[in-house]
Amino acid sequence: MRISNPFRLGVAGAVIASGSFMFAMSAGAAAPSSKFTQFQQQLEQQLTYRVNQLQVLSTDVTKATSPTGLTASDASTLAARLTAATGSINNLLVQVAKDKTMAKLKAAQKTMIKGNRVFAVLTPQVFQVIEADTVAAQAATLQSGEAALLAEIDTLKGQPGYANALKHDTAYVADVNLAAIDSAHVSTVVIAQLPSDFPRDTKVFINANHRLLAADIALAKANYEAGIIGLASGGYTGS
Figure 1 (cartoon, rainbow, N blue to C red):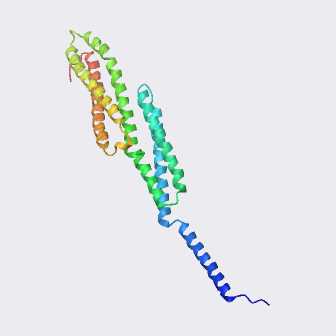
Figure 2 (figure 1 turned 90 degrees about the horizontal axis):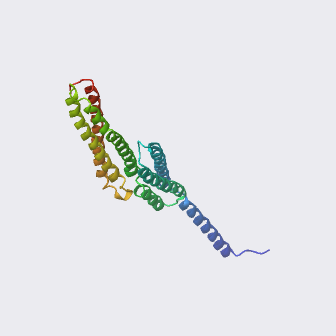
Figure 3 (figure 1 turned 180 degrees about the vertical axis):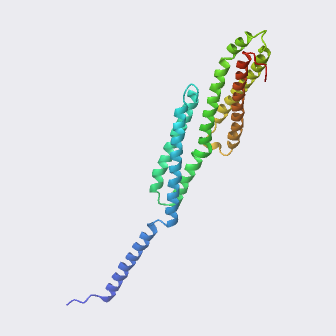
């Protein structure tokens, strides 16, 4: 009967044991930590929020594209940006699900935020440009009727309401022009903002809000003036 060399058996056993230990260590290292998994899941949720927001914005742009809403040029620009951002975010969703290191997740997070700026730039941009173009379209409609309105007022000469109508027509024209100027300024400046401009463009959006408010108030006043002019045609002499 052959007796195995005990020394060889001991070395072989040590090698096998060492290999098993190293395998166990490798397997343990490959397993994601709870911190990694939590960050990965949070990032996927944040990306999903952005996908949903981009869908809402895209729908808004589509619905607002009409003669009384977004201009064709602004609609095309916004739609292209939303499409690009949607593609970027969807690609990140696929990538993040496969990432195995924290460094890659953080790189994806940086691209998600700084490369797209869905909430900080695209969202106010879409809302404000739609509002600005809508106000501009309404102001243009009112401007187109100014000559006819003045002609109607001229027919009141010699009547009690004529002076009152003429006074309100002057205010009407001024308010309509103000609405047109403010809304045009907003559309031009806001549409020029890009994700890379953040946070400098924060002031742009704040100023745009003020101008849009002024434009909306001007339109409301113009409509009020038109109402008074209508009453003046019936002899109304009040304010």
